[in-house]
Each structure stands twice: as structure tokens, then as C-alpha cells.
Length: 98
Image 1 (tube, rainbow, N blue to C red):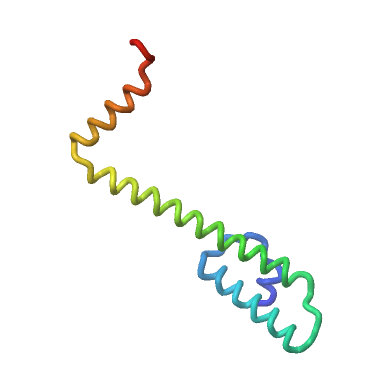
Image 2 (image 1 turned 180 degrees about the vertical axis):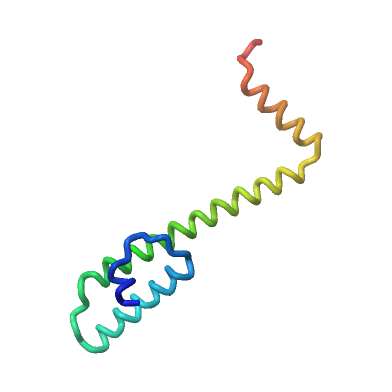
């Protein structure tokens, strides 16, 4: 795990693996503190990189879920609601005074 942590560079790890790597990094940092040994620079660097990747993956998941919800909501609209939306959009696209 230490080698994977030291050499992490945005590999194609899934979210579970990234969370495990972040947990390892936090434990490593805590152990350096407990042993009163200076933390190597790579610990903070790699921990930040892993956390950024977790945040990016979570943002992607949220965006995908939002698109999914919007599609489901759109599918629940009645024909009259869809027609009204299209007519309203058409009005905004037509030039004034046409």
C-alpha cells in the first residue's frame, strides 16, 4: 500500500480504492506524528492529490445523477406540459414583431 500511495498519479482507481488510499495516507501521517518523526513531503502531496481525485469523482457522480433526475422528471410531464414548454421556447426564438 505504501508503494501505491507513494507512486499515486491519477491512476484509474475507483472510488473505493481512492478512499482506502486516503485512509492509508491519514494513518501514515498519524503514525509519523505519534513517533515524533518528521513527515516526508510526499505524504502531504499525495494525500492532497488523492483527496482532489475523490472530490472530482464525487462531482462527476453528482452531475450524472442530476442529469438522470432531470431526464426522469421530463419523462413524467404530460403532453400538454411539453407542448406549453415548446411553445414558450418557440416564442423566445422568434424575432420581435414577426
